[in-house]
Length: 123
Image (cartoon, helix red, strand yellow):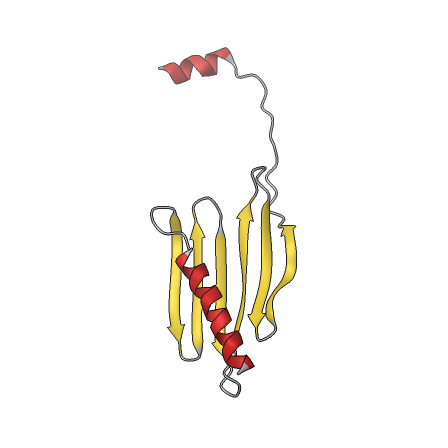
């Protein structure tokens, strides 16, 4: 009975998450695939939010196990990622939100532009 209760709780949680998924012009990618033993779900938005999860049902116990992650950017431009697991033991964060190092882009300072070059651009 406990397994059925946990399964229903996880299904309700997943349904609310999937229904709450962003839709519309903000999506870069979206996938929601039913597999033989569960599902695969992911999306990415133009503002950098992303989520990916895989749910599998253990054929021996009937328990749904969901593993995945989500990421987002803070207002200061730092990306954070959270990995999680949801199964018969509940929802657990596997890694706390931490900043993900993006590829380094050097800040290049330029000197003054010569007057002749500027005039050639004007035409």
